[in-house]
Image 1 (tube, helix red, strand yellow):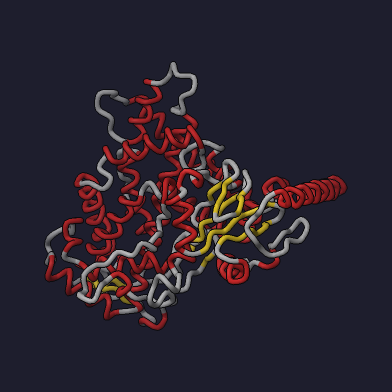
Image 2 (cartoon, rainbow, N blue to C red):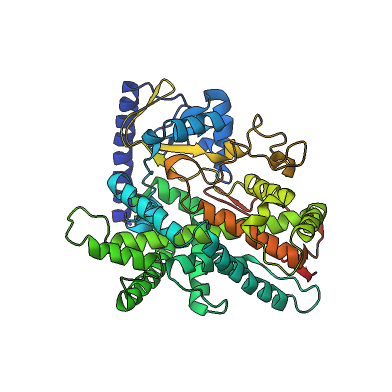
Amino acid sequence: VMDFSATVILAGLILALMWLFSIKNSRKYRLPPGPFALPLIGNLPQLDKNAPFKSILKLSETHGPVLTVHLGWQRLVFLVGYDAVKEALVDQADDFTGRGPLPFLIKVSKGYGLGISNGKRWRQLRRFTMSTLRDFGMGRKRMEEWIQEESTHLRAHIEFSSSLPATPFDPTFLLSRTVSNVICCLVFGERFSYEDKKFLHLLNIISDMLKFLNSPVGQLYNIFPWLMEHLPGPQHTCFAQVQKLRDFVDMKIQEHKETLDPGSPRDFIDCFLIRINQEKDNPTTEFNNDNLVSTVLNLFMAGTETTSSTIRYALSVLIKYPNIQEKMQNEIESAIGQGCSPSMENRKSLLFTDAVIHEVQRFLDIVPFSLPRYALQDISFRGYTIPKDTMIIPLLHSVLKEEKQWATPWSFNPQHFLDQNEKFKKNPAFLPFSAGKRACVGESLARMELFILLVSLLQNFTFSCAGGPDSINLVSEYSSFANLPRTYHIIATPR
């Protein structure tokens, strides 16, 4: 106990010194304005731990769209609203390519991989990942066929789940399996059976990880990582589980090495292994095993939970608004009929359906804080200086719900994406995948999955729930790092 108290006191003193240093430092610069920060804890007491982005919106009303907030002793600059976010990420894209060293992600990826890297490593890995995913059909016909095939497995499973009339089921893990399998085809060159115990266990780990990251303990880990490493708590269980994910990826890479044919790569891992071989004599190459494991992990985790949660949320929306569901079904019926698999070509004739899918993404607002950016050197922005090593948060929530960008930002309204002639209308403030040079690498894949899987589901089923439309609450269950939709047992009635 004495040791522990001494550790806490020492940690407190170090924090106090760092805080004083950062205050002294901030006087050197013209920092963006912000609320007064308390020693050691900064502005933490001013943030609502259940929906911190709401507190930031409130603070921006006083301090403006570019504001400085302290979490513990860590300085963050928030960008609020479409104008500030676009000006930073698009107009000053080169200044804002840095990725914030989020302690949780650094621990998970051991500092390697596409998601967390900067500079030369990030440029090499991003260029390679984008071109390899494109070679394997991301955004193209081949990818479309994989998703169409996966949708037949999903349909068969739902038919089986609801073979007794009006049997409610929880679609959460079913949708995770479907979406994850699309990524598995790209990365591992194979899909997994929906009954595969190992696969289900991995999906459980990813889901639990996101819940941990969203919890108060997960947020504290990102603010005081070295302290949390020494305290007991769920963070240790979470990292032990992550190790199982890494072991699985390691095993898959090993299998690929043993069966690799450099003349005909089967998937992302093969392409990376070939590149490792080509560059083995280049001392500055970023193509090594550590970057491969962590990049595969990045793709696997990022490509599973966000898209499947969005589809699950879309089903809740359709149950809550049966008139919208019926209108989409009528449109699908007249454009495609029932026997034909939907394809991206159909988007041109499914304008209302496309508008609803966009509005689902806007309204769910799945990553309200985006992933943090980072000042790799001092940045001049709107007359302020954002000092080197400052975390920068483009508040996507404030863009997707901004009063001046959307007619009714707080209601679900597909008309946001339709003009007066009911034709699809783009909105520049639709940024669920972020923007600029660090926008989501899987954006075109996610858009394709959302469209094909949802249209296919509506072609074949009508969705409802035992409690009726009024029992559905569209306000997220977890709401900090990610907005995770509530879980419902739904009924799928074959059409």
